[in-house]
Amino acid sequence: ITAAQSGAQWGYSLLSLQLMLIPILFLAQELTARLGIVRGMGMVALLRVEIGPVCAWAVSLPLLAACVLGLFSEFSIIGQTMLLWGVPVWCSSVLAMASLLAVVATGRYAVAERAGLALGICQVAFFATMVMAAPQANEVMRDAVSFPLGERDFVKLVTANIGAVIMPWMLAYQQSAICNKGLGDDERESLLLARIDTAFGCVLTQGVMAAVLVSVAATIPRGQPVGTVNHLFHVFAKVLDSESGARVLLTFAVVGACMVAAIVQTLCAAWTLEQALGRVGAAAPASPTQEEARGIGPGEIK
Image (cartoon, rainbow, N blue to C red):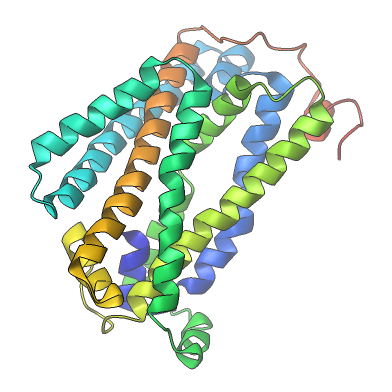
């Protein structure tokens, strides 16, 4: 929705921001992957070991709150989306919660990862809508180099876009997921695989954001409000020239994205609480020096 708001209010002016956020997102996530591979512990567990339980809880409590509030937000959006089919909010929320519990109750990270991939891949449909919206190349190029930082509303959306891409619970999840994934004993190979995985994910994530922005910007007049799923429905009904097609698109793409976020938030909350209580899970290797942590091993990876 943040990307859609950006396209509705400022056309293609925030398109370049989506591309600029790719390396920033990669650096943030690569750092958590590096720490997870070197130390074999999640973010909170590492803080507890290196600094103490007080610091661990000081980080855990805001993380837990963010995860809980995030879940409410995801279920709310799922409810709005399913209303397009006439499904009551309470019913869609119960179904979403049951699906989430079914994934988490398996106790296997591999199941959650595969479910997330299957749900998340639905968002690539926005690349098709971007093409179907037929944006004018000259307008895209003109707006893409326009960055009116003197406008307060524009700055607010810049901040919102950054916040929608780089989230604390996402980074905490990433580090814990690396540990649970068990990438192997070869740190060089594990880091390479993690970097490739992270780079691909960053490009795809920002590509989807850009596709939504372009789809909306090319379809409706600038300044038209797009803040709800119902607004998105009307926009994509114009793009697809079909209300039923828009319902199907938003059901798979939006509900899929929300369920992926809900899985991440649930696992992040569970791992954060476990680590704050001192149940690290995986045994940590011998504490490396700062130089080794930066290089992943004694001078092996730079």
